[in-house]
Image (cartoon, helix red, strand yellow):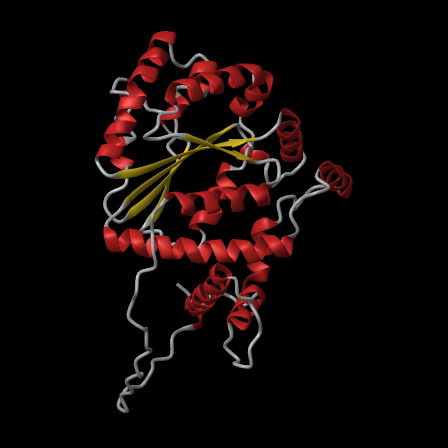
Length: 330
């Protein structure tokens, strides 16, 4: 983690204490106040955040105006960034707790195409250690995998002790795209519905914390986002023939989703619906909910001190040839 990230985490620890006790978060005379840490982090990462958040880089001004007109009450950027930083600092605490306790966390992200799954996953993992928090996004099954037990190809990707795994789509493909597009027979779908509750109960009994999220957008919002992708050369790659078919078969997907909820919403692993028409609120609300569902606590760690650099008076640094260096174009 960057030193600046460490600062903002500590700063937010203090801010969180004040919020919990009802005390005001105020500036103090010390130069390293929580407010100073927060402002420093906002200043340092603002450019990166704008680059990440800028979702219509190649759209015409006319299309941007249409989108803004359809979303008059979107969360403002400053409120979003401040809360995102606060929540990401809490996710670091969760990560530390998972590593310390050997907990196993599985987060399943499902939803319609363009519903914002990828954006939520990106913000969850943005500041975490990729060796602890990893994303699984499996391609279509191979011919060999099609002959296996349906859940077999997912099992190797389940979390081990000390891991957080996020599935960007999961075994619920069978209840959604495979069913609607005819890639699975009704018998296979029925077998899936019969098996998946017990499969997930087994995961929970083995000690895995299972969280299942459905990211929900309206018909009109999906239509608008697809049109934006069509007109954005930098996002056209996101539109596959399967995505376009999902527009044609909107009602079929709705019926499939309703069946899925009815038959797989079990007490051990319930579904949670995240409303996604406002992407910023969607991300914040989902992260808040994840944190509320896991009994983590802050893990005390030793204070990090930077050791002194060792200097060897007899060492002479070699001059490297110019061709080894990347040209300084900028």
